[in-house]
Amino acid sequence: MMIDLLVEILISLFLLTGVGFMFVAALGLLRMPDLPIRLHATTKAGALGGGLLMIAVGLEFFGDVAVAAKAAAIIVFLVLTGPVAAHLIGRAGYFVGVPMWSGTIKDELKGRYDHKTQTLMSPPGLNKTRDEQPKG
Amino acid sequence: MLEFSIFIAYLVLGVSLVLIFFRLILGPSLPDRVVALEMLATLTVGFIAVYTLSSGVTAFLDVAMVLALTAFLAAVGFARLIAKGGSRDDD
Image 1: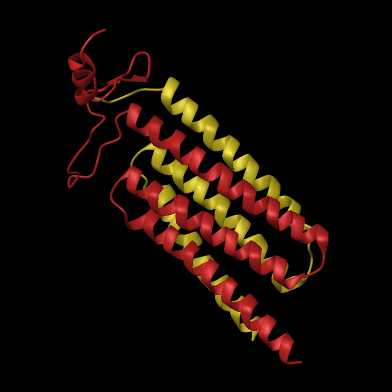
Image 2: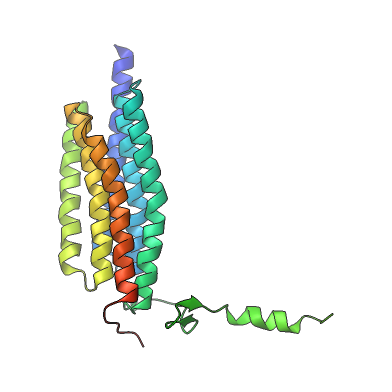
């Protein structure tokens, strides 16, 4: 009887925490000023919220191997694919020149990207130190 | 007590859905809308998790699994479309 209550409290904790992270991600998506910052808000908080919700499902059906395997697979998919997709979208957005936030302090990629071949040159400091090294 | 938590969860997820739809409609550029779509898929996975908790039907977990994968594929396709095709307004 006591254990049931404790498990219920634990599930509620995971449920409400996961939903809270989802809400924070949605709020960041709406309120943040810039594409990379929006990606930053949604990718991490959204994946964490989904993972916590799936942990709650696994706890509710404790001992059911099929449900636990599905929940674990969903967590793995969310955590594995989220960063890759965010990187691809952010990269594509940078290519087409989505305007940055007016408060952006530093854009280290500016001028270093070859838009034709879509390759990145190394930062200015690196070439210099390599050239200065003694030969032979 | 769990029923009350599930009620709160549905409420908060619904509000989040409205926020994401605002970004989907407002979003000044196409990448912003793609981000909103990606978040929408993650939110649907969360909705399925809460529904599984509230109803006890575990069949929709398969849908959530496939949805997590197809959202990734859609994001990859959109990223390729944005990077390779379409108009650009840089420099």
